[in-house]
Length: 424
Image (tube, rainbow, N blue to C red; front, side, top):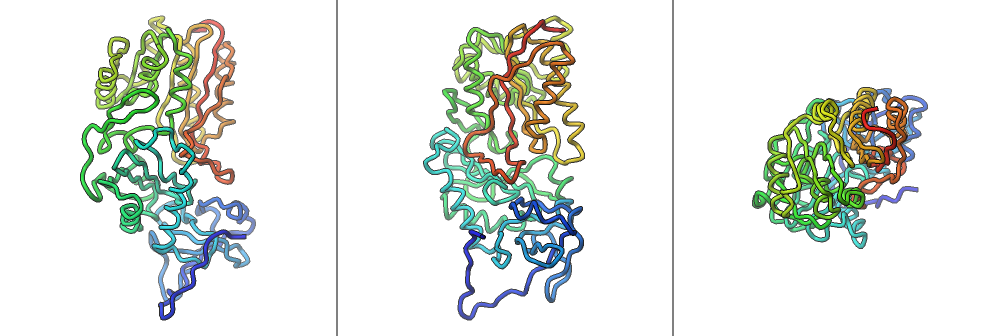
């Protein structure tokens, strides 16, 4: 039974004509009865124009129906993507109007009340996590008095003005920023530019406390929305293994894992590597801010190249942290991504001392936990070194997982003890 609220039109209100219909191929309806919101073109038999209208354009509403014509859900259409329809309401008669989006945002806000959110207290939290909040393609993070919006779908980009107005109404921020994600133009046909959408620009840097460490973050030009809120608990978990350790923090960005290892975990020394000049500069400033700069060394380098060089030099570590960026944004890239994870973890094992800790992460939602751990098994077999997973971890609670949408279980973080000899 649908839990969506049925809204009756007001007296005298003009009822809009029926929207376009997206008709599924025979036998392709099952995922949508389990409320998966993504309808790819390969599942679609045909698209029928709405009454008195032409073919649906990007952002137009459309109703999903099975091969027998029975309505399933309502969503927003995008003719420029293989992900043709994103579903939002499982009451196919419910229009996706301002009232609908307000209810969705209120539900996302209320879900996080009393849960501790990301653990960041009032300073920073994820307010909207796309599909997990019934808002496919939309991410909203809060940093103090500022909101950072990330649009990952051309369909919902058509609702941006409405969403900004509702965010102002519900959260009264000092400013609302738009950040874009690499790859959305190719996948979605979406072209947006980073901008201040409303209010004042934030200070640069803005400072926040996370897990006992103070970070300067750049909301305007930093990676993603400015800071990785999802890894907070994992940084603390890894730090618990770092007392007196020599640590390698690959893909360090603003220094999250490395700084937490040094300041909270008591690491002896941290080598932090990132390919971005801006990231290295930010991480170095954060080390000085926290009074641990004497225990961190920073290198601007590609992480793969750095790991290969350390192995040639015979340089080893007690702890290696791998937190690479997303390796695939589409299903056809899964095999290549798994090869990338295998190569990266194989190199890390070569520079780990016997009994060392490997902290290895994947933020690719299309890579399952089973697939990620299978490549670790392959690394163990190829290297001849035992790998034992001590902790299987995910994101902070403000990034909830929906059982029927496996892509919401996107962040895999494994803390592994690695036996045997380094370099073998």
